[in-house]
Image 1 (cartoon, rainbow, N blue to C red):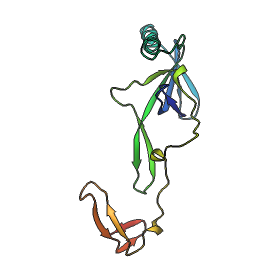
Image 2 (cartoon, one colour; image 1 turned 60 degrees about the horizontal axis):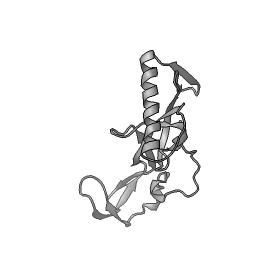
Image 3 (cartoon, one colour; image 1 turned 90 degrees about the horizontal axis):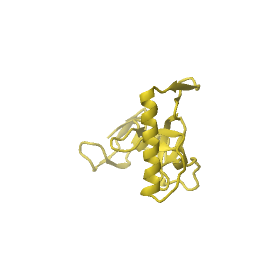
Image 4 (cartoon, rainbow, N blue to C red; image 1 turned 90 degrees about the vertical axis):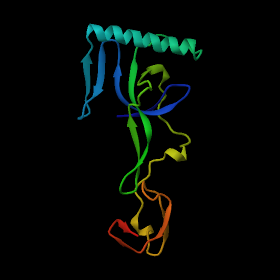
Length: 161
């Protein structure tokens, strides 16, 4: 699934999960093919109401004329960064309750990074060789947060303190 920035002019990073028009949902399958899923009559009228609501929101509240909304983009928004057991930082995307998950195609900006925000960089795992014996550390886990310690020995990639 492609990454994109949504909600112009207040951009947020998101992961595109589906694209819809008035008649179909277009979903990317596991093998990379785009599958069109037809809407029922009830879904078509709900889609029209949602498209009109988005168009009215931007014209009335934001002062922007989008024109007719013909395509909606369904997204999972960036929820935060998660550190894996290996030490890598991974972006986590999910549907956030209370936040809109559908955006007009006109408000989606191509994901082209000019200046990356250092707080949201995805990083690889930390090489265990930097954890040498006798190095001091500060534990930032759930229990005993911010306790200081000294590395006494290590076993493979698991640290013992």
